[in-house]
Length: 425
Image (cartoon, rainbow, N blue to C red; front, side, top):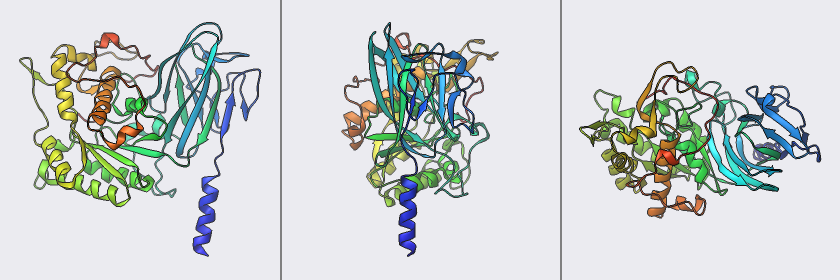
């Protein structure tokens, strides 16, 4: 009887969330017909967020953004497929869409004048509860209330986009690519900070969804201590993947039993073992290099930690992406001065409220973060890893020894900024 009760409860839970459609035209109606600038409030469950309802013009074609605009929908934790129909009634439109904490989903898509196009992508929506109970993973103080961890789905649209309708469909079966890591991996909520994790989403097809659980300042022990590993394991299905990148903060943990071949190695093996026990597939990534040049030469700063991870990967037969080597090649190819363009290095007053210069050699801007994501994608292809099945077709080949230049980078910035650097270094 108990088994039958649990089965019925599971079915009710699985099918309790239905597809929703939001129509913004004056021509057709849907589940939710929106023809005025309704703002998001909790008891209404949907609307334009961050006071951007004032930046919308409505017509029979849909809602046209006159500035970067946010639209939010209150939804339970789940994987969702988002289908958005855009139109360009009078002139060619360029569409960029980010989800949650600036995960890039649509990158400057050109829609010719007089046409419309529907684009579909997957979003992983996660909250802190573990197994639906009052038992929760921990957030750091600066994570509380950010878009990745609130109780809603948020979509950010670039300026000059006309939205006809949005459909949100729960995904019952999709492979999840979980990310476990630190500030170089996590979805950075505010400009000008960025990570490769929030650009990796742009290269993943609809066979998979990216669930980014990384956290600024995290090490292997703190990630576990905050119950983030436990949270991933509670969500993990057979056939899912967990991409694991740590090192920046682990190397600061001193004392007997710590170090690359102590606590770091032991915890890597524990993560791998627990992921495999649930039927998941671990993938290791050595830490991104820091930008530390002396006399024009890049100096390694991670000590034995990359080699320790390489050793674990070999011993336990785990797929490895050597991100330390890839980023070393990248930075050396740019050189000391030019590599600054990939990091958060800006003079004072570049961004609102930024009164002092920013000079960070660990954390990337959007250009640098995308370069890292491209290097990872290319390595997946080069090694013929199983992850290759989840990559979009026709991604241009990338050579970290011949990286792109910031002069060719045109992604629209998000309108929310923060001068304070992320945790970790």
